[in-house]
Length: 596
Image 1 (tube, one colour):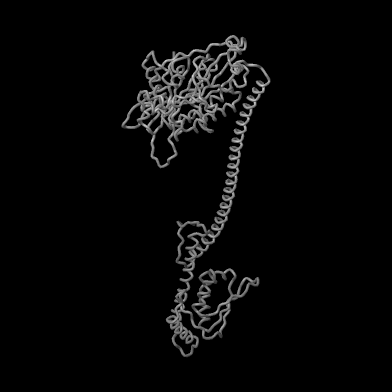
Image 2: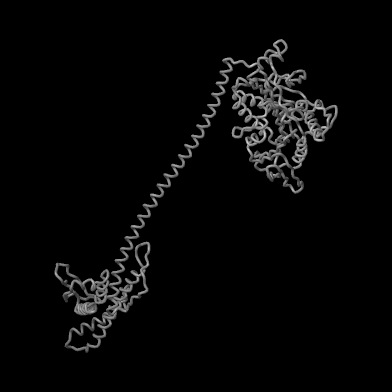
């Protein structure tokens, strides 16, 4: 004895209406338990397995259908029943999509992989629909079908099943039948939401030794929306009501759960066809599909379906029948007889080769797809590696360029710093008021200069300016003290007049750059030449000629240096009036004495 297995599949939330604010109300606590997160309806249910919204259909096939399918290959009957409210995902579980095939297509594929093309097996398909207690054949233009209780081998329906020899034809039959069921309408509404359907796979296995035949069948049952079963009262008018079968299905499940012995399965067509899956020699599993956003309707569905867990069945292996002794062409339909007798003929061999070819092509396509994916992945990795290599080379070249630039700047700054320090030492040994602090350090900047270089240059200029001011003041004091306004000394009178003119020019035309007044040069009649060593010419001229320019500005004399001619000395020519020439010569001599 065994129990009917009950499973639950949570269908993902619908994305058709993005504005709807639906939230999941059910949570999978573990692989067997389902809990409601709604505060107003706290409850918890336990089943054989609970599949979440992200579980693919192939996982359900491995857990639910595969054990039942393998038992059918050795002679046991099986049934997979999908139950749940409308729009709960029953059709998706059964058929699926191209990316996620359903359990029916997965079973058909595995069926032809295991026994497809075998001369000792025959596969037949049948697909019927039940609507308002009427049965129609979906594989034969929706022709009416009736139940024949006189047929043997459990052939309860009058429709002729189709012999299938390859996977392509089997998939086409399943899709065409499902399409006809979905496209059919009655009074403007689709029958697929109000009708039941049964897809039957019949497997005939022949014994190689004695020729006996064993028949087993696997049924995929699609039950209509479960929310309709409590809306119809039990009355005589139920013959024309679409959900009569669903109502009696509810009654049968409740009776089997209570252990009642006298249960009438013939009250509806659906229960009559499900007599064996619910009570007889069959391995049965029920898949209950629920919506994650619904609470009350889902609770009612789960409470009903959990009753099926207590129903016990006794699966038994079907017996072997000798076709030749049990049937004869006179007593049975010749077409059915030819379906049961397997002959090794060229057509069967061709069918087997077609199946093998299909399987090989399927494997080849899978290998090609996998190779294409691997090739694409390797191409992307190579592109990434090349880009990273180019980026690294660019970074290294940039680093070398920056390093070489820094080395050149450091070398230049070192030479400049040494020159400045040497000049500062010379100034400190002389009369300069500037004192170099040992704590000062060279601070590098981006433009290759330093704070110490700039400050030292400013200090040198100030030092020259200070010396020039001191020299001019000393000259003035000396001239003032030595002049006695003597009538005999024309030179002294000229210097005195020059000093007075100098004072007037300072008041009228002050120099904005040096603060000294340029002496007005009245005539340029006197010229004086001074010989200066080449080593002292640069110190006399100053940085950028600043010292000579200051002397020109103070005295008003014209000062010119002779060109280098290979001699150790150079001539300095001073031209101007006698006062300006005298003052300029004195300042040049004082500057040379200070440097010495």
